[in-house]
Image (cartoon, rainbow, N blue to C red; front, side, top):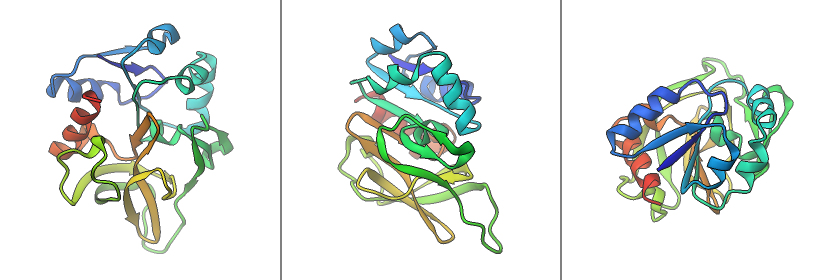
Length: 197
């Protein structure tokens, strides 16, 4: 069973359908007790960083998520929430991964948000989250902010002059900047790998 944290994200239905397609059972809840007892937890997110963190704190979910020892998987804003701080709304995040999320640099000819399919290169292909991945895979992105590449980076991507973390892992916390639920077979493989951790 995967417990999906009700953190105000708008992409819950597509995530539930994607998990159903791979045969994984999921429950959506904002109950800290249920989340604390879960075998696997997913932290989705679509929206603004400050608003998302305010909702997490209002529901007392921030400390609950930080204390989890089971596998935790963030998606899009959900993975950004694992970091220390975001330039979006000057927001303090969960502080699990020691780095800051920043906005893409404005460049001539570049569109923000970064939207569409892009390839991801893997720095640690032996990580169980990446089982079955080819050397480079394409995934679907929609975001204006990004986490830098660091020791926690499992997969990296480049958008114009910005290299950023597309997949991260820090202890039992992991996640992806792209939307696996909208990324075809490769995205489904990531979700299936997480469901088996």
